[in-house]
Structure formats: C-alpha cells, structure tokens
Length: 347
Image 1 (cartoon, rainbow, N blue to C red):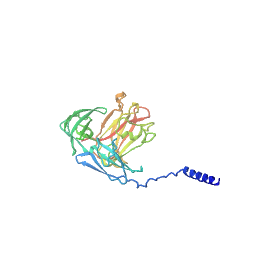
Image 2: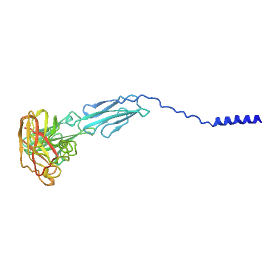
Image 3: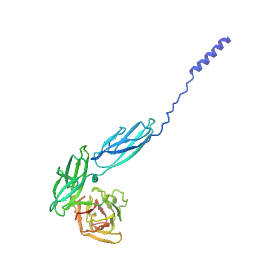
Image 4: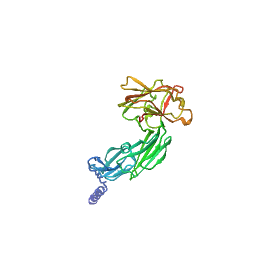
C-alpha cells in the first residue's frame, strides 16, 4: 500500500513539472549608432543650371528618402535631378537605420531667372525697340509675349530677336520665355517705354516703412506688406486713415527714381487716393517734393478696379529716401491700394 502511494506522488510530481509554463525569451534589438544625414550638390553641366547631382555622404543608414522642393522625390542613394523652373528649392535628405531611427539634412538651391538671362531692349528709332537676350545656358527655343490685359499675354515672336513698337510716353510689359533642351523654363518680365527697360526698385536694396498701417499690423491680410508684394489681387486697407499718411523706401545706395505705378483696390473707389505727393531726401530729415498730383480720379466702373496706372516725374538726381504722401482720398475716411511700384525710367 505504501509503495502504491509513493508511485502516485512521483507521477503527480512529473505531471506538474511537465505542465509548467516555459518563460518567454525577450530578444532586445541590437543598439545601432544613430544615422547621420549629409550630402553634397554639384551642377552637372555649365550650360544647364537646372540639373544637379546629389552625392549621399550619410553614415550608419539603410534607407534613403530624397525630396527636391518641387513635388519630386527619390529613393536612390545618390540621385540626379532636373528642376523645370526657376525659384528657391529646399532639398531634403532623410536617412533611416534598421531600428527606424532617422536623421535629416536640407539645403536650398536658388535658381534666379535674372541671373540666367539678360533681357535687352535697344532703341531702334522713335517708338521702336529691338528685344534680345544674352545667356550662357543651352537654349532650345524662345517666345516673346506682350501683356494685353491684366496678366494676359499674347505671343509676338518666337525668334531670338523681336521688333516692337511702343507709343512715346507709354508703358508696356513684355515677357521672355526661354526653354532649355531638357524642358526647363525661364521667364523674365520687363516693363518698357519707347526708350528702353524700366527698372523696378520696389523690393531691391532698400527698407520699407509706413507711417500708419492696417489695424491688424503689416502681416495682416490687408496689411502694408501687401502693398509691395507684386500681387495686384492683394491690397493695403487702412480704416480711419490720417491725411499726411505716407510710406517710404530707404535705399542702401542713392538711386534715381522718376516714376511709379499705382494699382487700385478691388472695390470701393471712394477709398482711392485723390491728392498726393512724391518726396525725396538725402538724409531723411530734409525733404523735397518731386511730384504733386491733385484731384485725380481712377474711375468708378468695374474696369477701374485692380487697374494699374503709371505716373512719371522729372528727376535726374539720386536720393537715398523716397516717400509717397497721401493728402486725401476720393471721399470718406478709409484708404486702400492694391500695389505700389517704385520705378527708374531710362532717360
């Protein structure tokens, strides 16, 4: 009887041992060095400023992700890429290791149309110009176009040079579109008179300041920065403006300004300026009046909204300071203007 009971206990012990749960073995991922993202950029050919070779110099990575700032991407280790237009492009390289750790680096590539193509306009008799261009890049074709109505362009030539006519004293806008063998395009737009190219100094080598701004500040949807943003569809609006309100440009070096363009607001013609002055100074303290306009009307019809009007005045002296002083508006106490451009006309 004792032997039977002993065998039963041994059997029970083995059964319990056999049913015990095995411990789970957790395998830790190996500790990997953090990846480092790095790359170099090289323009592939001297006559092609749009195609670049990107050499991956990253460390401790297994996966590569490129983005080129123009909606293009690549997973190649060291890709080559052609940009199809001018502008500023932020190139990013993101690298990852097997654990999913990542690092990113970015560089900005600037492709400036004005530095690639030189737009020329040569006087060819009274009211006549010859348009041409100069460049070191490879060119497949060109198109010369004339602005006909509020940002609409009409082709005038597809030759290297274009003969055009401009009425004496008038401003006209022409555009040069250059296409490269790989399909990249360069667009250069110039305002012209019968004497040649007008230089727009509005956003070049100066600081801009306004004496009275939109109530929400310069960065607001209708703040002062909209006045010089190059977009005729935006505007500056000031509720309860004070007569004598002005904006000014202070140049790093003296410039000879003798013209400007005003683009009206999209609505409410009573907010248009009616009386104003253009003033200049060599030091910001003593001002001289270069031009005065009184009783001007931009018109009250829908066609007069977002309309650009050019003004000129006589000036052959370079100044560092220029300002536009609003004396009065058509009616009421509110002011608006879509765009103001400060110009140097050929003399």
